[in-house]
Image (cartoon, rainbow, N blue to C red; front, side, top):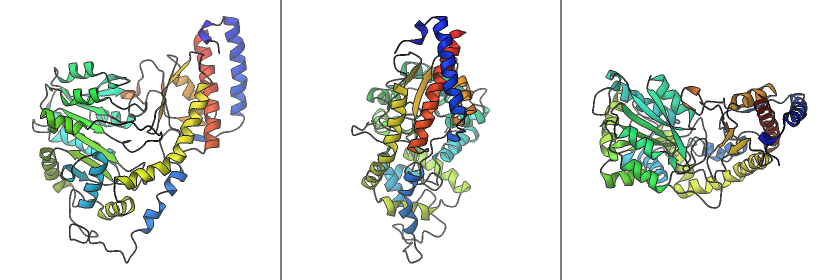
Length: 423
C-alpha cells in the first residue's frame, strides 16, 4: 500500500471523496458502540458467577483469625486474603493491606495522606510546589488524582523498556519537589509494555532528593496474559530491599478485571515501616473492610494457581478481540498514517495517528456512533502535545460489534489523515 504523504494533491482529493463516502455509509448504520473504558464483557463476568453461590447461609464464617468475619475487626484485611493477594504480588502477607473493591481508592487515599500528613517529612500541602512524574501515554485516572490535589505533573516519555529512566533519574535525584511517579509496570496502560529488568533495577537504585518520594507501582494487569509466551516482571520490592530503599515503594493491584469490577478486592503492598504508618491512620478512617467479600474471593480462587487457571479461561474471550483489532489495524500498514502497539497481555492497545489527527479521529468516530477514550486523556491534564495518541479498549463489545467498530475506526483514521495532508 502506498504512503499517503507521497501522493499528489489530486490523488489525495480523490481519496478524500472515497473515504468520505465510506464514512457516510457507516453513519447511515446508526451504530451505538461504547469503547471508552476497559470493561470486561458479560462473557468474562459470567466466569466468576459461581463465586456468588459460595457464601450460603450455612457457610462457616469463622476464618483463620478465629473470629466471625461477619463482624467488625481486622483493619488491614483477613489473613487469608492478605496471603492470597501477596501471592499474586509476590509479597509476604505481612506487607499487604487487603482492602475493598478499588485499588484506585487506595491510591487516591495514599496521595491524600501525602498531602495532609506526609510520609515522615511533613505534609506535602505545606510545600510551595509538589511534582509527580507521569510516564506517557499513561493511565488517565492516575493523572486525575494528582490533578485533583493540585500536584504539578511532568510527562516522561515511555520507551520499549519502560519510562525514560535518564529523565526519571534526572528529576528524582536532583529535585526535592518531586514526590512521586505513577507506574503501570506490566502490560502498561495503554501500550501493553512491560518494564525491563534494567528499568526495575534503576527504579530501586534511585537516590531521591526528597526523602518522602514514593513510587506508586500500580500492578493492575499482573495476571492478564493472553499469549503463550507471558511477560515477566522483576520484583521491584526485592530489588529495593537489596538497595535499602524499600520504604520508597507503594504497590497496588485489584481483582477488578479478574473477578467483578464493582465487587472485587484490592491490595496495597509496602514495607513494614510504611504498613505500620498506614495502619495507624486507617485505624481512624475505618473499622474494617468487607471481610466477607475477601473470604468469598479466597474460597473461590484459593491461590495464585486458581487465578491463573481462571485467567486462561478469560483469555479465550479476550484474545480474539485483540486479534480483531490487530487485523483491522494491519489493513493500514504501509500508508504511514498509523503506529500501534501489539501487546501480549493487559487490556488496551495504543494507537498513534499522524500528528494533529487524534481528536479529529475520535470526533469522526463519535459522530458515527462509536465512543472512544477521549484523545489526550492518556496525558496529564488531558493534553497530548502532538494530538496523536488514542487508547483502544477492545474487551467490552461483542466480536461482531468490535469488528464493525474497528472498520469504522480505520475509515476515520484514513479520512482524518487525508484532511491533515491536504492542509
